[in-house]
Length: 90
Image (cartoon, rainbow, N blue to C red; front, top):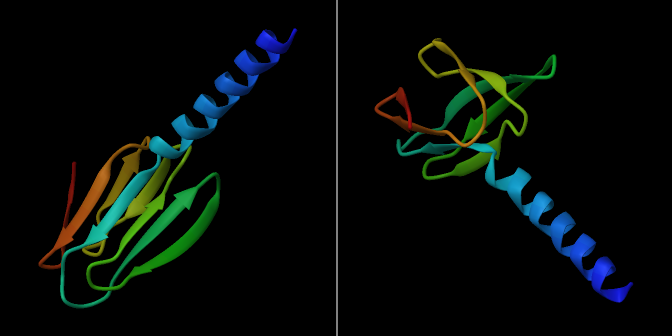
């Protein structure tokens, strides 16, 4: 019984860690603050990224409006790099 409880706890810990790893992230490589708009599950959120800041978002898929106005669909796990006011998705 104790072995089964330990196994269940281990599986739950892996699931919890796995969901965080699937988040998308955005990093601002510019010397000024940049803004992205994230729409996830019908909720819209503005994220202001200070110079050098990295932010995790988008756990369950989302749309992101980039600083130049382009809109992209993300599933999680991607990295949005902002440099020179333009964004690249990796």
